[in-house]
Length: 158
Image (cartoon, rainbow, N blue to C red; front, top):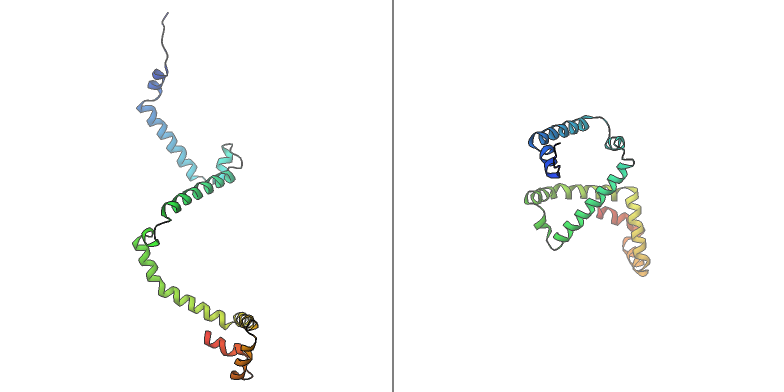
């Protein structure tokens, strides 16, 4: 009769060796390649593995993770200026885009105030302004005659 002592160390030395680790790596790489090349969605793959409603849970966990990282980042950077946070190349890109952005804003503003909706909005704002200042509108009407005030102000704004 032969007595052998079986310990966790002896099992680990037999199972966890360079050859078995290499075989596990090859197996995992093959499985990952298979999973990445499939046409199935992530939710379908997780359902196939027995994880029902996993896309909802995964989305919740991802959202919680991202929000947590954002809160940590914002606390760390709260006292810093934007110039300290944004990389120089992005700062330059933002500066370079200012002329195009301002041109776009002016163009859209002109289009809006030239439209019927824009004119109506301006007229409402003027009416609200002069409701609070009663006699001022009468004085202005003396200077501009019978024309509507909006017809004088709208072209100036545009």
